[in-house]
Amino acid sequence: MALSDFVIPAIAFLLGLIAAYLFFRQQISAIEGRARNDLERWKLECTSDIRKDSVNRSRSTLKGRISEQMAPLLPEFPFSPADARFIGNPIDFVVFDGYTKAKDEKGDAISVVLVEVKKGKGKLSRVESLIKRAVEEGRVSWRTVVLKDENDQEPDNG
Image (spheres, rainbow, N blue to C red):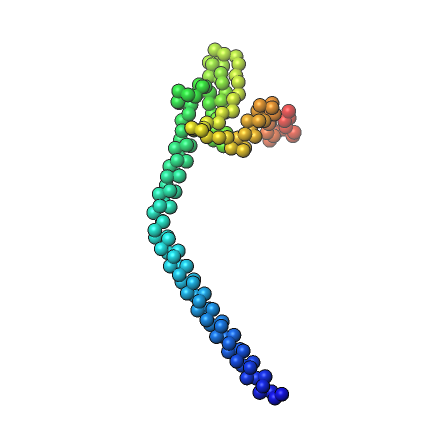
């Protein structure tokens, strides 16, 4: 067998590979172009709906946050508004029930109540449920932290 018997089929094979590559490359480019056009058309059609949905969700979140903070002023709130302290996260309020009376020397008992405000049929989040369970199981404590004064050597954090 002569060398030319291998060269001609090899060249034909390489030309076939190049033609196939160029053909598939052109097909891929056409598909990419259609996909880009579809994406741009989708953006134009849906951008206003997406923006409206985003604004509505933002409004809903803001309304929820405002109603949480305003809860002590509503008639359904079972504590004195002056006794409630908003913290927002991970729970909404710490209520020092009886604080106002004790401060005015008309009472001598204060209860500490953690309050989470929900609107409608809102459910507690996982973390809120864990906090609720900690309180119910009595895993609540008091700790006074004394910061070191520049004149003191060792603070007593007992």
